[in-house]
Image 1 (cartoon, one colour):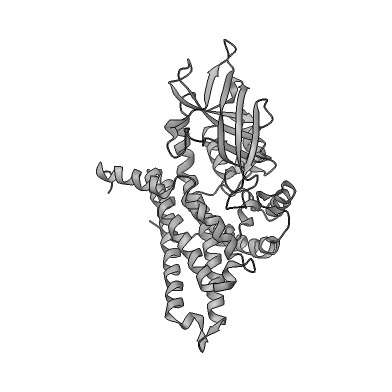
Image 2 (image 1 turned 60 degrees about the vertical axis):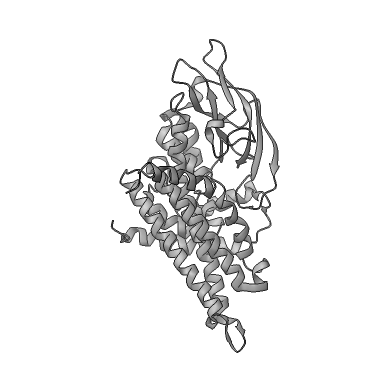
Length: 395
């Protein structure tokens, strides 16, 4: 593996860092950032700043308005963007839109790309991904999917019924990617199918927005009912019956890009704690010179390094077209838990200051804790990894 960074990526990282420090960090106290994410007005304002800086949608191909970065390029730029939680929003590379763009670019037909991908890549609209359901429906086990799609007679249309929950960005989204099961169909095998549907399609209703620990994801996390949602055959994303395969194709890189963005946030918390440890004195010397604090800073530095190397290794595999699914599971566990430790230690170093909003560390603490749950809890990934180990699937 070549760990050297090409000069064009070095320049892009520096450009991103300057943008985040100069434009994003000063806006972190904007009152339009509410408990359920930034308002649409604020989001559009941020995206306009990202567009003016030439940094929007770095992960999307140039044909669709992005910068066309590969996975290693994203690792560099997304970490720099994540130094402020507003950075990925302004650069239009935050969840769930970033992963939805990846899926559309890989699976959608040309007409669907023009209708959905192009405006999404431009930041003109948002999207949501409807797979998770309340119990006893699908969560970490997608095979428990209860939402159904059935044919509407001989019309070729589908009728979708079900309930989805923890649907990030549902409020204010322009369209949804809906996962539903169809037991049999003339176009494909039994299984799950993905459908594209504008959010104003009759029968789609956001019942409520859940109050959650995090607050930077636009539109929050909603509960959505699907009652007699009628979509045409042209709404099928990819092929009928291939939904589970597409979901894995979406989730593998999405887990990794989450690691990239939150690594930037952890580095921010670590920098704040380090600066504080240099200047705050106790018992006759700076905090950082006390071993208890100095060792925490050292442990955080090692965790950040481990995350970066893990991300780079997995990104390299994906760029080579090698595997990636199991490696992204391992990266997700390693990074989500290490990033949590870094932010937790940073809060501890800051002491009383750490639990206030006088720094961003308390907010980052709330943001990174859910990372150990979404896109698969650590325990589910460990179970999956263990099954592969028992089958002799490691090397």
